[in-house]
Structures are given as structure tokens and as C-alpha cells.
Amino acid sequence: MSKKSILSLTLCLGVFLIITACLAVGAPANQATNPATQAAATVLAAQSTAAAAITAAPEEAVPTATANPTDAPIPPTDPAPTDAPPTAQPTDTPPLPTASPVVRIAYVKDGNVYLWTEGTGLVGLTSSGDAWEVRISPDAAMIAYTRQHPADNYRQELWVVNTSGATNARVLVSADELAALRPEGIPGMGIAQFAWRPGTHEVAYSTNPLFEGPGFVPNHDLRLVNADSLAKSVLFEPEQGGFFYYSPNGKQIALSNPQSISLVNADGSNPRRDVLTFPLVGTFSEYQYHPGPVWAADSGSLRVAIPPAETMNDPLPPTGLWRIPTDGTPAVLLGNIQAMPFAWPDNAFAPDLQHVLYAMMVGERTANINELRLANPDSSGALVYDSGESLNFNGWAPDSQHFMYTIYAGPRMGVYLGSIGQPAAIMASEPSSLRNITWVDNQRFAYFGQNGSSWELRISHPGGTNHAFIDTITGDYVHMDVLRP
Image (cartoon, rainbow, N blue to C red; front, top):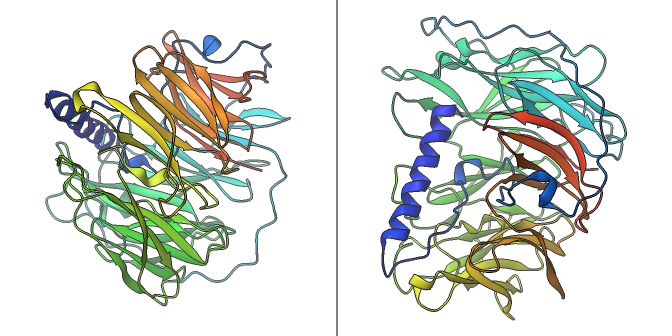
């Protein structure tokens, strides 16, 4: 996705919040999660400085990074579209070796790809200065990343770099290949979504047209490229796929569209179309909401929360909680919750699917008071865990016991760590300058904390100690990907 597309989506969400705030009897102003970046990472806000964000502890320095100049800049000239290169059919590959059980964090600094490995430190892997997003391979041997030409918003590429030995940065999908896919009259074509297929070195990606003005319209295609052999294939042409979510075993894919969810085998066979259909969810923008399903650990089923079509009605219609079998039989409605509008409840289900958490408006809308409610997966047994002004749920920890939420205003403003059956602990008092909080295991999380005009990447313990310093990033854009042990 280009910088222009992300700025457009941010503008759209800003419009949502303005509409909400301007309705004197409307919904509370809240920090809505950007649905276009939902798979990338959990985004929170917190704290005025990184040092004050969490109870202070001695810093742990890491080695100074060094860049390896192996990749040249994207050529600035935009060539005329050419015929797409021939594609090769993917072949089955043996399972990848398991990565050693340590935390790894890939991130972008000064437009270059860096990797921090617990117990080893960090290393710079590229030097082109135009990296944008990163994804670590399942075995930690490679990092796939997108590149955005700094002077041309219409030129993007997908690359990969090795994490050890000869880095061998190499192009997976060139700007010329993307240009060959663009319809007549469209200035450019970009990468909308990309991810590693679990257990393989295959990178799946989809595309989107890049416009001169605001707008994000995904092509709903799905393509594959093997990072070892560079063999390429097309699973779905435009409007045949959707936002894609691989099952944990890598054998199936859920395809999310604005009005349906479908299933298919990872090789494109056994399509189960429209296993769940629903009305278009109102976003009050050109962006169409795509629900984010959650796979069961055994890859045997999915759960998904579907917001109502009329997101501004009063009273608010319910959000449905659904179970989707993988055998193609119809989805089953488990229950309903009154989730807050525009705080998309994609993260409501715990990873073990045994609980749901969601923010719910209570009282007069102008008071902006929300309750954080914990319930069974069928919405029964709901309990009020906490309440606060403009409260919003941020996400579950991998252990399905801990979670984080933010209170954005009022006397209890801050970022909180909650736990089932235990009271919450405040983690930071200013919910404005922590970004990309991402759990690295059941006890710790990584985050970018603002420190003046820069951001510090740190890894912390929920108890407020051992918040080890990793690196400093200048500029306003920060991005990371975490590979958990």
C-alpha cells in the first residue's frame, strides 16, 4: 500500500471521528482502528516519552547497526506497461526448519530493513532507503519487504532479503510487473497486502490501483511468489479473491470481502464461496470494511465479528459473533454484542476462542462513556471489566488471559494491562505517543515510544521492568513485524 493510500485512509478515519464528534447526540469520539492495516499490528496510543511510558528500569544497550549495501534504488523512470511475465506453478516443498525459540523484531529505520534478535542484537540488512513494510518468514531466514520510490508514489516493488550469511536482497515483484497489471487510465499499481504462507518460503500478495487523489480500492486478487526459486503463480484474478487470511497450518485461506467470507485450499482448489454473507457495513467513506476472521489453532474453524450495516443508528444494532466451519457448511451465529461503532471488533475473540472482549457505549452518547465487557464466545455471561471516557479495546495477548485497552480522556486516561479474573494495571498515563504495541510472548510486548522528535523501539515486561532499548527511529513513520518463539 502506498504512502498516499495510507494517508487517504487516515483522512477517511479522521472524517469518521469528526462526524462522530460533531453529532451532539451521536457516538463518542473514539480512536478507530484503521481496517486497511488490521493484519500488520495492534496499534495503541500511550505516554509522552518512552522513558516515562513504563516504570523505569536500567536500559540494555544493543550493538550498533550496520547496513549492507546490496540493493539498488528502484529505477525512477516509469516504463510503459508490458505483457506480464510468464508464471510458474508452485510445487510442494518440504516443511521449513523451526526457528530457534527467541524473539525477533524486523523494523524499518531511515527506509532500511533491520532485524533485532534477542540475545544477539540488531543488524541492518538493506541500504536502499526506500523500504516501507516488513514481514519475517516463518523460519526467520528471510524478510519480505515493500519498497516505495521516494519521488514517485506510483512505483512500488516487493523484495526479500536473507537474515544471515549473504543477505542477497532480491526483487520478488518488480515495478514493471505491477505496471503490467494496471488498467488503462490508472497511474500505478501497488501492493495491497502481503504475507508468508505458514511453513513455506512462499509470499502471497494482492494488489491495488494507485490513484492521483484519495482512495483505496483493493483488487481482491491473490498471487504467489516463491522467495527461493522466484516461481510465480496466480491463485485469483481481480475480484475473485479478497483480503486473505492463512490458516495456522498453511493449508487453507479465508477470503474476506465487504459482503461475504469464502474459503479455499491454499493451492486454490476446493473453493467454498460465500460461507457467510452479510450487508455492507457503513463506513461513510469510499473505503469498504472487510471483516477480519480469526482461525482456530487447529485450523478446523474460524470466528468472526460482523458489525451492523447501519453503524450510526440509535439504538445501535448488534454485532454478530459467527463460527465458520471449514467443510463448506453454513456459518453459525453464536450470539450478539453491542460493540462500539467504527472500533472494528476484529480482535474481539481471544486467540483460544474462549472469550470475547469489546467496548460498548453506555449512558448518554455525549458523555462518551464506554464499558469494556468480557463475555463467553456466544456473548453469554457478559461482565463489565472496566469503564472510562472514550475507552477502546486494543487486543489480546497470545495466552488469551491478558489484554490491553486504552482510556483516551478523563481522570483515568491511560493505557491499561488487563487480565481475566484480576484487576487492571496502568501501563502509561498519556495515550498519545506509543505506537505499534505488539505482544512478543505471553509476558512481554514491543512498542515504539515517542521521545521528543524521535521514536524508541523497546521490548518490555508487563510488570514495568526490563524495558530494553533496541533502537531509535527518526521521522513520523514507524513499522515493525514480530516473530514470536
